[in-house]
Image 1: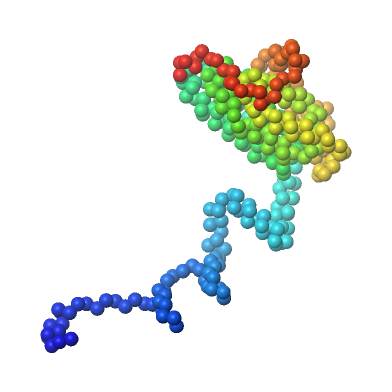
Image 2: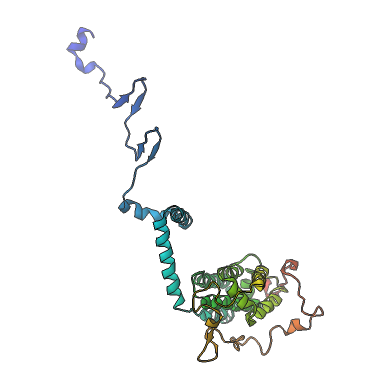
Length: 325
């Protein structure tokens, strides 16, 4: 520094601010930072522990699959957590056993929406509406399947399976107009209806599936296959029949492995002598036709041995009106 610097201090460059650092014995410099991690004895870091008030609102952001995995892991490693989960399952099963859900209104609503609601519109307008109708059908299917899980009353599962079959039959027989035709095409590939029926059957016990196998509902599923194969829809019906065939080997007594009151007798109303949950004589509630729908197939030269769904390669649709939209 010379004498001019002392006389004119404003000409000197300003000092740079000092950085707040720590220097260890090896001369390495570490800047101080604000971190949410803490150091362990072996030098690794781990997240700082959150309080429950902070943690609780963040849990949903993990997503259902991650939450389920963490809950399962906690139940496996912590007996008290396992006990809490078992208690909740028991309470839920008891709650569901006290009610039987009837889904028949879903099938009636879907039939009306496909066949009546848009019938006065021209082809173009019906085509535009068909997407909304398809999503409405899917919403009904999702709602039914969600309520027919493994904790549901067996009669509720039976009802759900029966109504999904009715919805499938509506779709098979409702391609005479643009809306029905377009909805029907959406079920040529993997679809929520096939998946929903399989999901309900998988939630059933072998005893329940055998009851369906021995019930007239099984014959109605066989009829559904005969209706679906020529128009190449519902490819997952093979999986439905496979699950029902698996139940043929079940030889347990009614009530085996079931809670009291959940056997086959649950499907019957002792006061009226017939089912409380479905009307055996109401297979045609919407007036499709008089008599049996499958009459066109009964005269099959193969004696009713219809082809498997895998043989269905080319969609059998040829509507002249399709040229208009």
